[in-house]
Image (cartoon, rainbow, N blue to C red; front, side, top):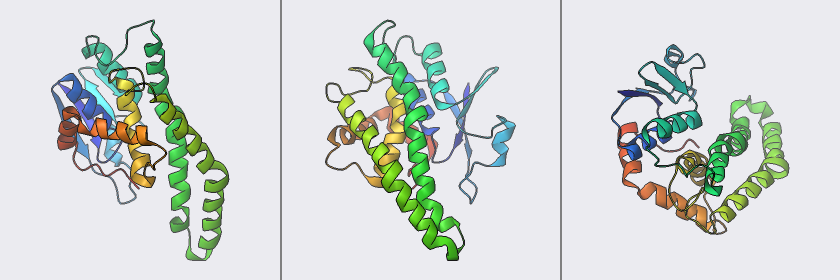
Length: 221
């Protein structure tokens, strides 16, 4: 039995979705966030970094969303949710599987940190913090994030999914940053393909079953 150490309202929702798409039996061990919104210390008993997601599968304990999705597809997929080796689709699959957390999420996380900066400092410093936050968003983060989302919109111009014509683990990996962006800022009229991508994934029966298993998923704002 696979065990998913699942932090509420987090990236680990993708792992539940992957397991549902694969039709595997699994157990969810739910961890509640601290008032600070950080993961509880009890997760360190599972993995030294105390982060989620983590899965246990027999003697294997594995962290990191992308590594977990690759492991599950390679061990249990029987050729599903991954394009054939040696194809252009396989290269796109590998790229987006790493791009989601390697390139896109750091920018979105930095934006979240700067947006929250004014509320995390003493009141006397808040005008300065607001100015720093606005400046970072205007000159650095905003333009870069806009460039990334224009790129992603263009990638869906000729196909419904990021790697090719079919859903793959790369799409499941990409779902979190795109849903996060949609929840925090919306996908305006210039990004209709990304908006349709979110609608497609959220309409999948396996996605809905994963939500039932994982609990409320409001995408932290």
